[in-house]
Length: 478
Image (cartoon, rainbow, N blue to C red; front, side, top):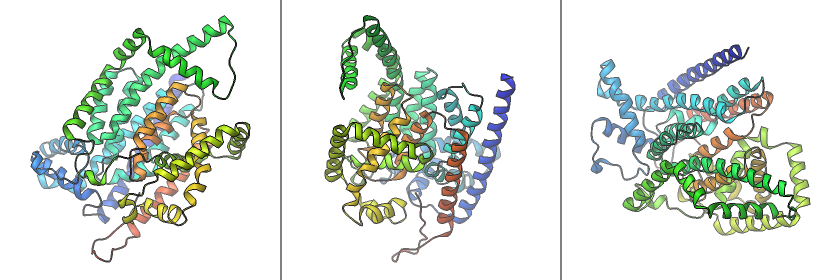
């Protein structure tokens, strides 16, 4: 019976992957017909990849407007060059815009498979329906609108996702050297991916801390020590435990031995920052790091919007309001701090204000810029979204949550520019780790994603416009 179910799940998975890839190929064909020239950031990425394709790897050939490392171009050359030798295609064909864009479509297939393997590893297999839920969850995340859109353009998103997910999978299987190596590949696609290599190390540390914490609780239970009460008592106990744990040389040496590949990778990253004089490679003036705390709030809102079938319900709102009433002082302090962070640390990047091709331009113009008070009125929504996200992750240990939210903070807050694609990786990591929702809710979520994707692609391909000072065709995108 078990073997039959596994075989059936394999058939379902193959059908889902095949249908998704077929649909993607049809969409890719539509993109290729409509978009024969480089668009948006492709005007930097595509010529650079073509220079690599021609064998011009010198720094003098590097476009100073490119801010990421050359991982995408190196992988592209590694794929298209053998195609030239095997099929006898000309260099003009293998280094064409269409062929280079197709690299991301190949990455999307890899991402689909990795998402499925991660769901099998992360989620428990204790329900008969879990195979359908895993496949539906995989399909839903594979067509997650913000990620899916960039499978058709020559951007770093698909490759960045592939190597980060692969590193996470290897970490969960205990292959930490391989995980760190894949983490380095992810870093070569986008420098901020170093945070997700740290997250992999954090997974190992969280597991060991959870084991030690359970032992500590059991010991206290056996000793029948009186439990301290108060709003911050649990937080205080965990802090005391962490302090005591970190003071032990045995514990620290064990963690170092377990995570040394990731530590080595962090040293490589630090060396790169010192030699490069910063994290960004090229156009540094437009990519300066700052403490943009509301980015965390924007991520919470983004997650609430795309995961609303799991995070938004009357019972959730009622539970939140009851908790607010029960812990008035705590939530009052959180609200005050949030209002202060919005007041003092809200930034509007020049690209956000000037580029009307991105959806974020319209979100900012019609929501935040229209009335000054709106950004403060949204604070209760941010708090609810943050609480709902944390509540959906309560099946994970307190230490896993701590590691995740620290990494989330590190990857979002330093970014001055509000751009939805920066939220893709943290969202996918979050969505992988919540308990598998019921099948009906997954079907509803998938349906909503399909509608958003249809509207996004239809608008991009058909609702074009022109700027007054340019003859180029402009398109709306994420």
